[in-house]
Length: 338
Image: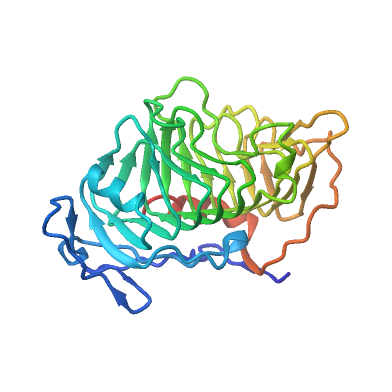
């Protein structure tokens, strides 16, 4: 394991460009479909973002390859649910309606610009090799599973630079023996929702022993903003690496939930005025473990005394960390769809 501490303002893995063409490597999106008014060439859209390189547990995830731009919910559903390898650029804010979109394997879904997003639920069930990037995601009506994104029984999933707001169940849940997932540079918030403001559930049952050896998840440089109440994340069984996250949700109940047989490593995070940096949700005989380093910053927050600083899994990949003191500026300046 190789770790590097970056100075304040260190940049994230996703590069932004000002161009009218989306590229991934040296590939240019020139595809179009004249028969579908919701499908166009990326050359017709002001595309600001390039596809980020997956890191953490999701390293090696490549997503889809055949480029297409969609401007309607119907065209998006067709592309996302196809069996083809697709690099789907979302132009506009698309309302998916009352039913979820079941994203298939080998997909990259990326917003064309900071105004791009979806209203509804993206479900990844039993799939692999998916990248979701630069989208504004909301699901206030509880379409599909009620989540913004649900990752269920899926592997090699990389979610980065998204903004989640007011999803009626969870904003982003990772469940049912999903594995090798990274969530980075995302902003989570609740603006209008009055209850169930629960953010990230990793492992959905105390008796879901099939999750053992799975749920390996990296969460870094995420911003838990106003309204987030719990589950940032709450973990059962998984090995979860949390680093450089900014916990700034005033009035939250707790940040990290330590559930049955979980192993959680917390490094160089910033806890601002939090009542509970982490809380115990383990059953008797199935105690989860948490490890934290000296690079965490606890501002107006007390380090919990109920949990020993325990040995957990060894991180199997190289990663670079922002100094804890630099997390607020780095994360608020770069997390979300921008």
